[in-house]
Length: 221
Length: 113
Image (cartoon, rainbow over all chains, first blue to last red; front, side):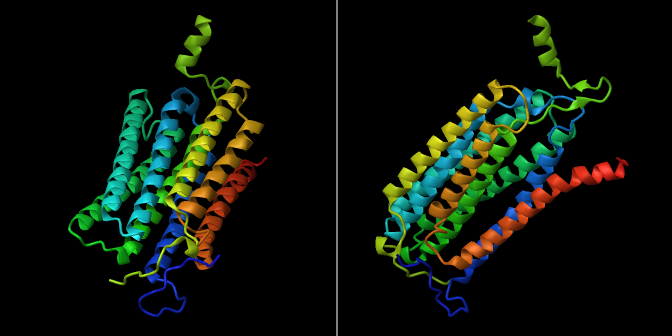
């Protein structure tokens, strides 16, 4: 199988389009950015001294649907690329809109999740869990927002006829960014939501920290 | 603006739309298994590292590799792109594991244990 690559219009030392190389270099650097945020979350896991804690507040079924939505948006994005590569402009626009809509649904889900967490008492400055959680997922949400804006721009440019088949690399670059946002969420979903966090020890009682709702439920039983 | 005139026919190694859909189905199934493993792990009690947790991490890694390889076309593209991305990823992993394993030890040293 021959290696599929994008020969550059202008000669380059690598024979590859510099824009694509730049995008991969940027994504590599963004790995470091999210890696540091995820590392901070992981280090401070189980070290909060007050409630609420992850076990009290996460709604796994809800977040699973959110994760599925973002996963499907990666499918629609790659179908948009496939459409422009075969010269199907209508298909490109349909799949771009689908990707943007799914991304917006994800953002809506994140907004609802954030507001419900705040309603339950978890804020940015409440405890270590709140700080690390909101910073990590907040920055991810900001990346998704930028991605949605990029998709909207591509859609508008395509509507005006400014995205010919020969310029499919533009869509591919946007796709690389969008898929990166998805793979970051794959990591966040696993490490932040699915991997159970250790329960911290209450320093005043030297017992495991029990949050109000759990204590009430234990008494009721 | 530089344009790309490269043809993306099957003989150039890029998957077809049906293959992308099959990949999406696989990714969805893996996600469902991950969620199921979460409930298996939480019903078993405890909050430490367990077999379901290990399986979740393995499955997430698999999803990561599949999206990067197929959707981001890294499997079919120049290896130079892989080196650029993997370099950043490796550094991020190094940061993560260094902080996870070094910080507790440093904290204990500072506390005089």
